[in-house]
Image (cartoon, rainbow, N blue to C red; front, side, top):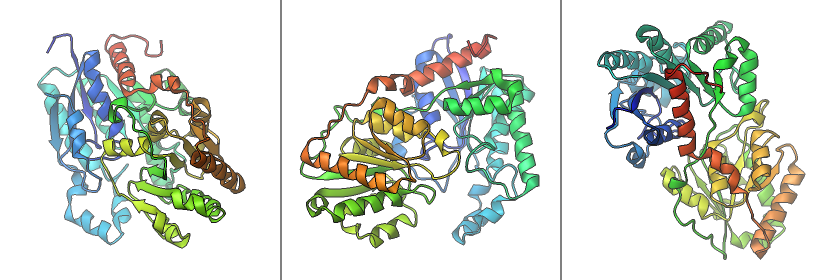
Amino acid sequence: MSDSFRTALMILYYFPPAASGGTYRPLKFIRYLRDFNWRCVIIAPTECRYESRDHTLLQEIPHGTEMIRVNPGVESTWQYSLLRKIKLGAYYENKFVPDRHIGFVENAIVAAKHRIQQGGIDLVFTSAPPYSIHLAGRDIAKSAGIPWVCDFRDPWVSCPFYNQQSQIRDRQNREIEKSYFEKASAIISFPEIRIQTERKRYPEFADKIIAIDNGFDPADFPQPLPEPETDKIRISHIGAITMDRPVTTFLEALKSVLDLNSDLREKIRIGFYGDARPPTPNNISHLGLSDISQFNGYVSHRDACAAMASANLLFMALPNTKGAGGIMPLRLFEYAWSSRPVFLISPEGEASRFVEKTKTGMWVDYSDTGTIKNKLAEMLNAISSGDYKHAPDLSILAGHERKHLAGKLADLFNRIIEGKNILE
């Protein structure tokens, strides 16, 4: 390999074969950074016992990538496994500051320092959550004197879901987070609304905070994209269903629409791809939709992308909570690229503006149940009759392709190494 290559040491908790939502962003960086003269050395856990697994993701790691696996700490212990089984895992987790992954972080720090002593590392990169992962970057930046880039896939104490019962723990978390902003060479956040929030919270570090958005990879999709069936209307939801997402609102609206149109009901098939957690399966049974619903469980990422492309309609529901307007799921980029109509239930914000700007489908506020039902009926009837005109503006997606985003990250790395202003 050419001497022009620089090397980033990446410390990651979510890494293949773990198939968490946190896996894809750093994995795609690793895959495409080589196109911009950066190689990666990876430190990751030997196992992430409680995550879905997708061994096909291992194929995306560039050949010859150096990987160092370390013990994940508490998650590998029989005590924690037992407590999770009896629903007491949270009590055990509260012992650790800032989170239960601190054991992995400690092991990763030892491995990182050893690897840095061997030479050839230009920069350290960490990506959170888990938020303890940045302790590794902070420690190494101080002890080894090399730059550290801190990537927040999700915000921490400014997150809409952040809730600490203990004032002491809250104060500890805020002090730790501030130390990240202080010690890092650069802080990556997204979308733009979050960047502005963080710059207001930490004005003294505003010139360190930059945006590198989430995105999608066209290579994950079948080529050419398949044509959906015409005799059936396949409605698909891709991704885990959790209690904080109002999927039931969509299903209740769908039930009302189908009760008024028995012919449409004959055509509809609903597919769920990903973990379907309570109460959604019970709600589907209660609504009388079990006969037209199929739970496929977790499927590989490529199979999930194929399911998107073969659907007649994709739906997504964002959390019904304060601050959710700043959420921009990576799945929505993939939904758009699949060129299938999207029905989004969400507050007004980043996601709703994206759907409107890209013309990828319909957005309705979750509080407006009457409009949800009416717009869904309108959309399904148009799809059923062949009158639905879907003309998304995919040109907007060009800046969100994973390779392009890896190029932005490589440019940031180079600017840091060369002592340039990272905001120029």
